[in-house]
Image (cartoon, rainbow, N blue to C red; front, side):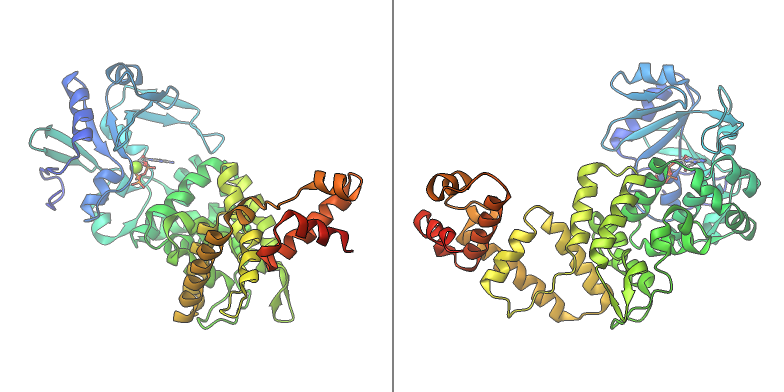
Length: 452
Ligand code: ATP
Ligand code: MG
């Protein structure tokens, strides 16, 4: 999109073909259609738009879904989602009235104008529409009734209309304010900031799912999430939606990089690849309550438990949550080149049931945020190489914990009775085999089992 003065014609020549087709289908059926949201805002900022594409139309949801038989749609809010890539979310022009529960409007009215539709949007920079005139060439013009372009140019985030009223309508906008201000390095207009601070406690009324979706967009779409997370803290929203994280403020740390446990955590989030940012954000939350005599006693275990609670509250799917909790539980390993091969095998066994890739991504981010220096990466790379080597040597035992004998053999050969003792003996044998893989033969193991 070329930068031109407000109100001018504006062309969008690099519109993706899939998006162009969706817009053309709606326009050809005789409806108004416009792009809105991030796909207009981001190019105006000179940023490539990474998320979904949002379109607004005068057509009613039934009419839109009739044009796209494969699309899924949510009747009440009038959003039709057309699978991509890229995904296009088509929303019927609507006005929203009421919001007694601070989540959902009491009433949605369709059949309003684009200008009215823009008025219900959260921030001025999100209330700019691009109206196509010729989809073949990408010619079109902007509708910007609330001065969104001027705010973009000045990097100011401001609600459309009275900030208090807008945050009272929907408290998720508090989190969104931090997301946009952080991502685009905007200052928050004083009236908007003041209202956000005053209404921060109302963020508690927002459902876990909605908070999750915004939080994941902060973590995954923002190259430097510490900005938005820091704004959430400054506005007093962090202690409402993530009290476990906010509690790290002021918890002292002694690392090469100065700062408290929250500073360290935010640096780790920035250093982590997108998929490891949630685990990085939660990896040290056990530190808030475990500091004793200069050490964080058991903060990995405590942190894993706390993280499980946070992830459940945020409705993170169980399998993903389990991977994150497992990585936090095991993140305090202390590899040294002096580890014996048996120690490496023990590490493999200890971490057999967790996502080691995620654990290692976390460790690298933790190292970067701790100022460990190149030795950290050397050790980490060496540990990974030694794991590959050990797994190649005895994949069976390590991966399936498979011994050459099992509980039945202990019963038939040694006359043992079923019960916990059998498990204890098998554990002892496994330990012995981790030390000396050559013992993993039937006779040798039975012999070992007899010695007690
Ligand atoms: P992104 O590029 O991250 O997707 P976005 O601005 O497109 O950012 P979306 O959540 O995709 O954000 O929403 C699309 C548009 O819908 C927003 O730009 C805004 O105009 C409007 N919108 C979304 N959520 C709200 C809300 N809770 N209150 C008011 N308007 C909203
Ligand atoms: Mg969007």
